[in-house]
Image (cartoon, rainbow, N blue to C red; front, side, top):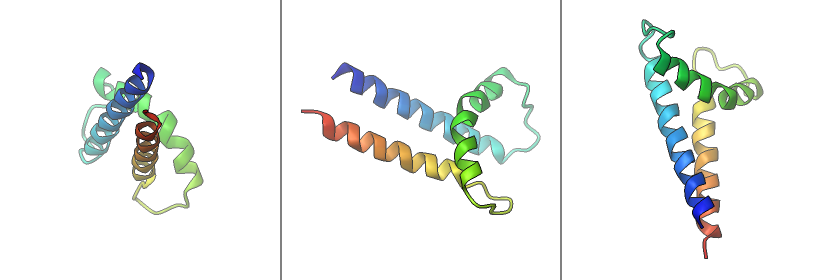
Length: 84
């Protein structure tokens, strides 16, 4: 089940990237032109944006990362149950 292992690894890496982006949001003076920070935004924004657009406005809080964490957890659980 090499493919499942690779998908699970990619999901874990995406979780880390998403967590890094959340932590960076706590520091508003971070230079968004930094290549590492730009990379984090480039890989997470295409997943967060559609979810953010579906959610009702909640003021200054963005709940889309929590929704993505839950979705990734569900996908990981399904993948683990696929294994024989």
